[in-house]
Length: 185
Picture 1 (cartoon, rainbow, N blue to C red):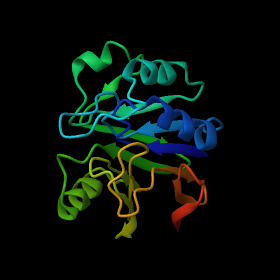
Picture 2 (spheres, rainbow, N blue to C red):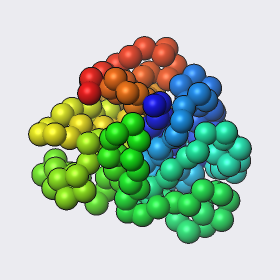
Picture 3 (cartoon, rainbow, N blue to C red):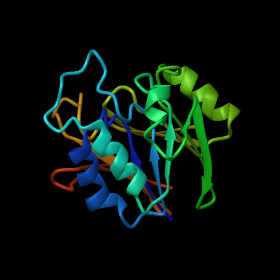
């Protein structure tokens, strides 16, 4: 099993392309935890902002993509994406693991995330929204935030994504391909 995990692309086509080419093109599945196409009014306009190009790349992906709705995603985005934007949760079962993804703006505290993960019996609970990386185990659940490949709010500014395998989860710096965080199952 190999699952690519990405969030908060905010319409940045080339950042998606880099993550896809380096980490996702041989994956079995890609999970996008929201804020796919629109950059949002609080975010700066980026050089590679091209939501139509990003939508086309997602549509052309040979790897299936599961998307959950972020606070910047709207019904108009669905008009150009061939895969449905699920809201507020996307749930899948892969490699014997129950994986739940949500954007995170509706479960911002650890307490709310813990309760949602418990209610859905999640082995892996994925969020986005904060544009920083999180990888930790609390109780029986691994909590993952892959950060952002285009609008990082990490202290070091690194653009990131994650990969889930049968062995565990790695968060990568997209530019250097360095493993920044890792956890085993």
